[in-house]
Length: 183
Image (cartoon, rainbow, N blue to C red; front, side):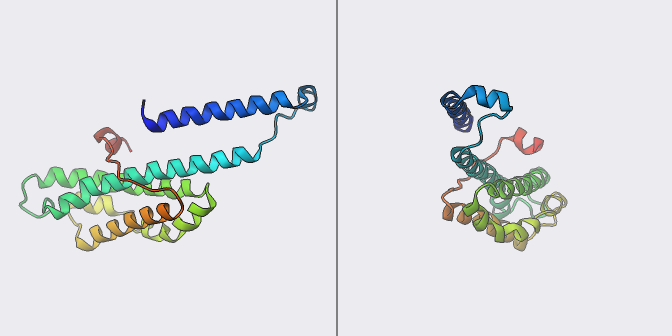
């Protein structure tokens, strides 16, 4: 079972146990008669923050892995140059990876909003991420240059640094081909 799935199941079971403990420990007839369920506790806020960091790490890791595997590495190997062997395939994969990376980075920034410290750390990077919006199209057309790849690396490194400073270390995770093409 994947680690993120098992963590999600553990978090779900823990929250159900906390809910049952809270419900059983309170006056259930009063809760039922007034129509109110157990009110959210401080632990539910903490769980949301932990889940936000976990999602941030997963999305940012996938973005970093896709960017390195299918954009940075082939670019440095000269796969995008005219006349390079396998150029067309490399450009198509890079185009998909560019769109995927942009999508996952936007999702990571959205996840970061669930954690105050992470949100502050990531906020300055939003404009850099927005500048990557057209990267997938530029890659598919073969119009990418060193500045584009350098900008992408800068944004990825910024996200990693922001996560690390907020206690959510991001590690590259290369997505599968089906994840890449399916978004």
